[in-house]
Length: 323
Image (cartoon, rainbow, N blue to C red):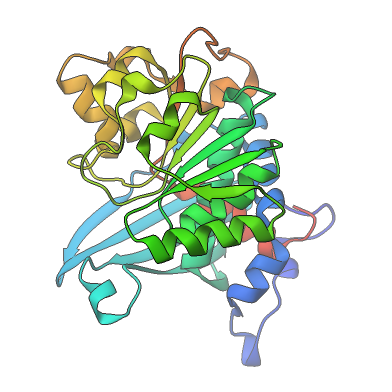
């Protein structure tokens, strides 16, 4: 992940008196748009990197919420995201999650750049979802059903529009004006979009769940065997967006088996009730490298919780245009 002929030190500009460069949201989005983020993550998995080598995310209680510490080291680069999760913040007109990313070179562990962390998450999460979906979804997919109306819902619509030609995008949400806004956003991307409800999964090609729901969003028995379903709304064992009916009949792909069994409520609860076997979980890296083929005889589920290496790969892409 280092540009040929240069070092991490040379690739990062510095501020006054050698202070690390600060990359704000606009700079990050301009340097790594959705499609580049997807390609960076896919290339990292193809290179032989294994997500199970990533350190586990630390979760520390703090105030009314908790702090997340997410370190990673890949090649010449190291980094850590420090994120805070405060469930009551939306009522204060503040983000539920706030984050800052610290990027270092792995040789000296000297700080090379600071990046706004929320936008990294907004980029890398739909990007890794798109990597998985590109391998797991039908090539001729035309109908996308999206649960949720927040930034991740919009970012997933944009990312997925780059990998398939959707003729019908359906947005499902609890708040009508937010659903309307998400539909309008999809239309600005040139997509035919409309509002809908959970029954729309009955003939969906791709379903993406981007909510903070604690209970399943729809009846998993309705999902066609041909469909790909992505769930990324939570990283907590007690929360789930998908029911055991779907998890039990699907090929379930995860970023990393141990991480999923620690954080992915959709997986943990289905394993606990006997619907899903832990040893049947498939690592995304194995799908990307071709070690495991998608099972087209049943639904394919990708459960994502977000991992440290994804933030690092995107952060390096921001500071190194040739990554």
